[in-house]
Image 1: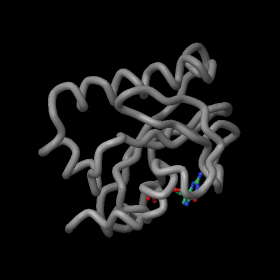
Image 2: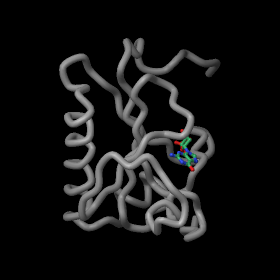
Image 3: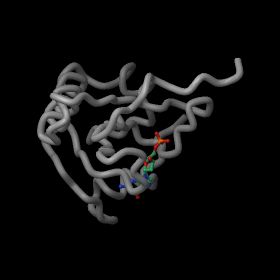
Image 4: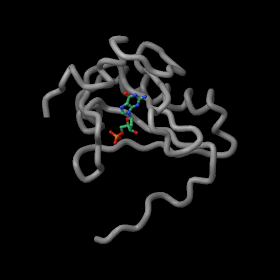
Length: 122
Ligand code: DGP
């Protein structure tokens, strides 16, 4: 899938639409999810144009990969989630219901999150 520069997170990166920004560095931007699923629900996106986790892990440079993952940890620490715990995940593609085609990691926390994902029919 080709990267669409008009996706909503690309617009956030270009400051064309607002976000509740909580962290930014050379490689990553973090902001609150517009539709939070948990008391703390943060999205972290790379600054580069990557469609999904598949694109990012295949094509990002070592510096982007390392910088982005470091940012995820920093955001969780800054949000005070380390002691109680948190979860991060990335949706790739249709089966995972990825809605926005710019790679992003969700950080969930602020409550007991239960165990992993709900069982579904195989
Ligand atoms: P995913 O299904 O993994 O692609 O999740 C996309 C998330 O992005 C979803 O939790 C809602 C969030 N989202 C969509 N549009 C916006 C927006 O304009 N601003 C913010 N802050 N979050 C958004």
